[in-house]
Length: 433
View 1 (tube, helix red, strand yellow):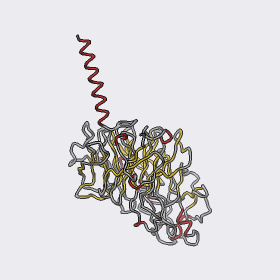
View 2 (cartoon, one colour; view 1 turned 90 degrees about the horizontal axis):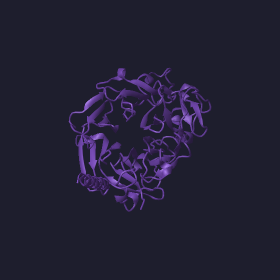
View 3 (cartoon, rainbow, N blue to C red; view 1 turned 180 degrees about the vertical axis):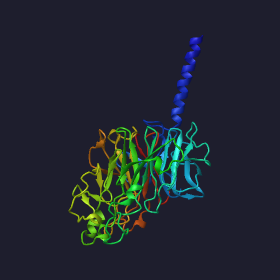
View 4 (tube, rainbow, N blue to C red; view 1 turned 90 degrees about the vertical axis):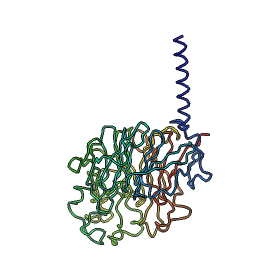
């Protein structure tokens, strides 16, 4: 009799597990993708064969970075608080892929947001906060966050604070340079660079703090990496156990030094670079920039460069170099199994799009994919999702209908992309049926 009861309980438990799995979606990682129907026009996106896209939500505000919980809940950071909400929590309660429940909290703007363990971490442009999560990964007390780090530099230029956490209790935050190229007079033609650049003491790098220690300031942190003008997209590569970042390269080579650079050169240079960092890495800003056409680190004109002199012998080499001024705002290493095998552990990069490539057309406004093997890029980067900006060439930055910003992976292996122009959230799925 006891054995029969045990057997019945086991069967019931297995059935409940199957039911629970079917509720959360469908697909190789966790259920869901097979239940989601892409929009008829793939939300206006151009994607590789076999992929589809849908608009999860729209008109949310200036949506920056995004993180998705194990239950499929979506947290989004707004650049500017809307209706006194700087963080949105979105839910799809009926499983159709569209958001039908939205709440908000955190009356401050910013960029960074990340779920790790029992906490949601979010940033303003000066501080890092955390919110305790319940078993469903929903914030318990949205009105009373804990202050993790305070007093980070905000000089109204490259002020956004992007974050990521590792598996050892550390949080990494970008502190962008409040300058283009550390000139004595910022963005002034012919002005030479300060030597040494004083900005590097407290900005232009990645700082590491303890995720579980409250009320930290600069003195509690470690300058993990330096020589990075501004990093908005960053991610922890789990296969390598290493931090990777995307740097926004410097501007205005022709405007500031017209005798050394043509308008065409200035439109394409310098590269937007992906770096693999370790503690103590120096990526060379402001003294050098990377020329993706010559495949060389070049001495910056503010420090005696002329477009031909190389420099930065001890500076890190980028692992990938993209064309200039495309503004990489999101970086994600894909660990899911919904997408085909070639995407596993590769990198997606969201390019926000340029503002200063005149007289050339503006460029970017897409998501690219970089294949990786054994922790290193293993092939040329390729455009993965395009069409955010709308049809036709973008002559002026304001012509772009949407600009990709944040990236996140859902529990079913879907790829989420935010747009901070019209507040659209896209979900890209692999159509396995």
